[in-house]
Image (tube, rainbow over all chains, first blue to last red):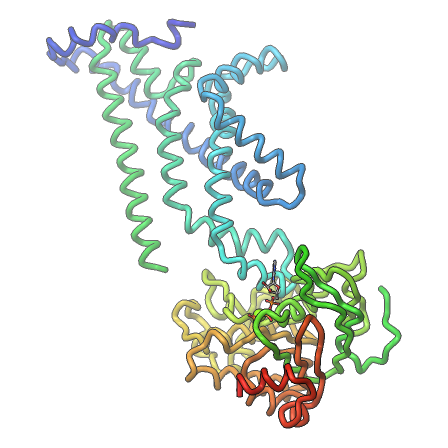
Length: 239
Length: 250
Ligand SMILES: Nc1ncnc2c1ncn2[C@@H]1O[C@H](COP(=O)(O)OP(=O)(O)OP(=O)(O)O)[C@@H](O)[C@H]1O
Ligand SMILES: [Mg+2]
């Protein structure tokens, strides 16, 4: 387990690496396509988790503004548990407990998607709840006075306005998700980080592959950040 | 459904209506009838419960006790479909509450489309007709943020009319408007009243109340303290409280 979790052990004498600084990407050239394939895995993983987490977070946020107390308490307790537990613990729990409890041999990717959906759902539900509460109460009253029922009221009137206000926060949540996605490398999913570690272990060079994926992560995060800034400006102009 | 033992000519019947917020007793025993096609102006000092009374008529506030009947149907009965009732009772708010993410046309056609499941072409045609009626057909495709206050309120009236309600409630429809826009909204309301609509209007526009209303309710102390035709009320209010109120606003 230790080795799986910390495949980067070889990096530890970092003072040595820093002292030498003789980077040689030629040594890992043939493995670079293998590492780059990890971009797909990481993006797929992030995208699926973000979409499912958004849907689940929306449902949870409706629980949390519900006047039906059991739903309200469930939403609150759920959020509290997921915010109060380290992601790596939840991830390991789901990865190792699922086969034990259900007999289903869950893959690292699947365990990751489930964990990240459940976890980001908790965070996103808080964001959406705040967004819903920020929509003028008059909007709901106007719709109710027209006889609009709960579901269309939420889907057509309240949520579009709420989500418009919280789009930047949602992008930030996706950025966090992208970075946290590296945790799935600990349970064997072949994401970007895991692939760098594998190459490192094969070639006994860790600095180059890790540096490569660090840059890739940074670029991906920057793209999302710039997108969110553009989005924010556009929203500000339109309102 | 429980039917009130009244004739068809009664649009709204209120029977011993009480409403409290916690320990604050806002409405204390309101009993009245509003006949079909009648226009009632509700006036009274700030905080006397005018909005609360109006909102009890479409159950945006749940009465603490008492009964309300619309078209003979008790809307305060335990198992009624509140949404069904609200389809029949339009409301216009002080701050318009147009849907900001929909065009003017979408605002007006949304409820017929969603609530009444009206075909899209028909809903859109109906919305255009209504916009024409309030003089805003050329604004059909703009978003509400591009409209003046008076235009917004006229769209809000069209939106409420689109459900073809039997009763329209107005809660200070001109109080948030710049003075020069008050008239265009009052004109539309007057036109609606002339079409035979039953209307309950909370307003500070005494001239309008006098001209358009059939009856004035003066709300005070949680009750309808006076209920009289406008001429009678404005020329010789019975209570001192009404007299004082009129001195202040006229
Ligand atoms: N949801 C609520 N919760 C608690 N108190 C309320 C609520 N709504 C109204 N009130 C109180 O009830 C009283 C009557 O309010 P209401 O809005 O009906 O008065 P109003 O006659 O419409 O006043 P205004 O002329 O200022 O609009 C006020 O004291 C108000 O503070
Ligand atoms: Mg009021």
